[in-house]
Length: 374
Image (tube, rainbow, N blue to C red; front, side, top):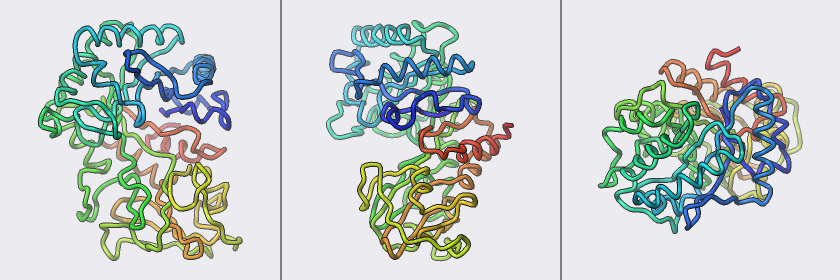
């Protein structure tokens, strides 16, 4: 599984996806409006969605529409607040579902019962209302449709802002929950891992924020493991930093791989998705294209050293010349996450997002290897 975001369209058309490597693609994002309708961030989004569905169905694969996202959650709370609003919202979702010949709906509400992005509307009753909305949506969708919910590493918030202790009712209406195990730490002068596998050293300041703990938390609250999907990133973060180790990690937690293992290249300074070099996100493919990661081998290049944080089981790059630290995932760390998903009996793995991989699908293939797929 993977997300296909509308902003990928100009450089990564939906027809470029190798659908043989996926079962589901989630198109991101439709945005709830103040009138409980759906809108789009990009004027070309609906064209991309139509093309994605056509290409996926031609390959025998399926597409869900993802509603919300970090910047699209402002009106979720009022949209599900009462019976009348829920009815309008679900009716409008169904119009889009039918218009674009979809196979399911993904709800990415960040986050019920919590503020999320500044300006979001929220109440302490959000999670209870969310459940009622999902029940209604399930009743209107055809039996073959699938409903998923993207969620934090801990269950939805209760009326006191604490993780729900019982999510079994949600399990009865959702086909799966996608745990977004990424963005744990972003760009910072004291950087930390983007997507920790575990808190292996027991010294994280966010001990619940890792794949292993997240799976345990959701399962303990009543979500069957075969209804859990582990979300993994194809992107990382640039930090303007001279750090040689990741934050809240043991002093001996780093193993460095010498950049001398690959042919010498002129030093590079990495740019993020928007062209900046002081912070922000960048795709794994950009690490390769900009010359900081070698292929094959995925070692440091261009003045960058690849290091391994044993506490989070993730790599990171350091460059004294560029003054940058890059926290990211690569084939090795993603295969480990997929192996965890398989060992714990999860439904699968979903990558955010599909256009961050290399031309040879190195990240996706590593996930498939970890899941034991051909």
